[in-house]
Image (cartoon, rainbow, N blue to C red; front, side, top):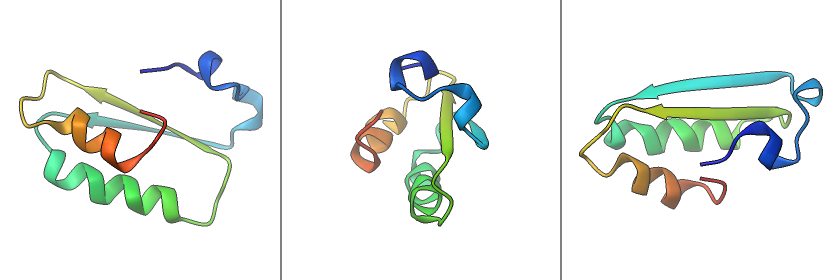
Amino acid sequence: MSNLADTGVGANSLSIITVVLNYNAGAYLAAYLKALITQSHENFCVIIADNGSTDNSFADVQATTSDA
């Protein structure tokens, strides 16, 4: 996982930051992330906080985005 400093994106250049809390919701998480990624606004950051999921949620995120 990375933080904003690691992304090269300054917090001042972002207009939307979305925080997603997850616990065993991998079945829904991939569709949610695809919807966020394909929307028209380009200046955004998604932070996913996982609370010890056992359903491979993190693997689903990695398969959906290259920045996980």
